View (cartoon, helix red, strand yellow):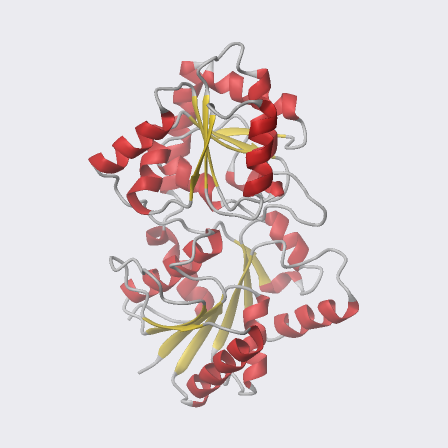
Length: 372
């Protein structure tokens, strides 16, 4: 039986934008009738049984051993002569194919590109690794123009296409989920929400500081921050320093109906991304998740957010370095019911155009396969 092999470092049940993208791609291809085999880093954990990802094999443990085992598994599949196409989450996973030592044969190789995995000033060895991996790839699917521009430093532009990553429909929230979310808001208003892996470039710290510009006009304002990340201790300390312990809630990682309930219950989604060192937000799939629920969005001018949001349409783009500008953007939306309603409608419309049902055919074309 002919198959599509998905090689990825990021896959459910792990949480994150790339994890959602790769899980969504595998599930969409399976739904089209393709035989899909996934080779993923990590461990099975609790997998959402409502989706079929195909045959998934997880590789955990010590990184060198994990890479060797994964390359061996890929080599076995490639030598079977049944692989039609290989889909990789990044150029780093394409290296697994190189390490396998097996020729890809007639298999088409497609790779997603997200942004920060393509440094602007790499070391010589890093640049050679990236160029070597990309030389094996037929098509690089960049999630934004910002990302595509970075990729083109390593590979000719003819191989690069720009396509916003599809976002799956959110899991419906239950009455219990909605009650949980309302409990976090504790009756506060307006209700601001950030949901992301917590790192400085997401702009959560500057949003916390922006509350200082808003509390006089909005004494009951609440800000929920959901998601895991290494920046959590610093952000918690900042909340204590600013005296906003009763206004800011860290909800931790959220999935399923609880995540949907947070989106549904909020007034505004805020993620004013900024550049930190050489890192920028490549796209921001959570913007589109929020848009599914009609949430107006405050995004950052940095990175690929501009590909998601058209200024003054589904949301506003601001300089994520400017705390006063972030506060002003928030106020301009929460203080204007008519504007918020228009943005809500535009957000829902934008999200409706980015589902897997509308984009799986494009991925099949990239991979050189037809519906099963």
